[in-house]
Image (tube, rainbow, N blue to C red; front, side, top):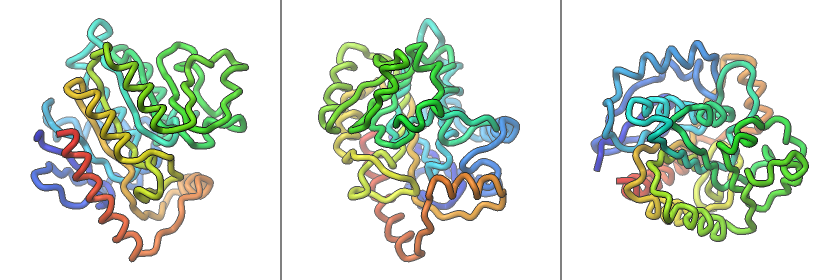
Length: 290
């Protein structure tokens, strides 16, 4: 198994045998949930010499509040891929992570940046159940990557009529069950054989499977396992987010935005219990991605 890497902002991942752990606690307030482009680039410059050039295992980043760090991990692949030798990006997430955010980059806006990368041929966001794609929030989504056919939303049990009215129907694949969705996606991959970067936010899983900081989707672990197996050796990099952690922001705008996202306070006993369950799931995912 390739060496897993833990970007340790919030101490939520726990111990992983053989992992390279990079302490980033000093960056937690600046980076968590969202940050300016200046702070994002500062962290990237700090991380770049600490990471192996290539051939490392899955990167565990802690809470889904750090999912925008996937952009940095994907950007690093530019040294190996190009527009004539591209990759695809497959993201499991209950949210599109393609929302407008005028203040820099945050955990719900990074996908549009990935879609701009010349060596990324397409981005698939799998398992979206969130109201972020509902009619009331349609114009909060960045529409350009959808219009440019660089981004596809794979959605479950959601009314997305607005996509039809805006001429975006082909950018949406809508399903009534997770089994149906995964089968359809795997069928599209059968003859594709593209190098694939895989990003997993565990909030795509049902809350009956695992607990996260965010509202959750409808998938089971076997849906992830089936997709990983189907992609097989085409997976050239991966990351895992969606750990459960508790944090109180010092920055006022982060306190306000996180409260709007209804992230609940978690009792200490439940936090430890659910983190233990998360840890077991991480072991499963690392074995599958090994």
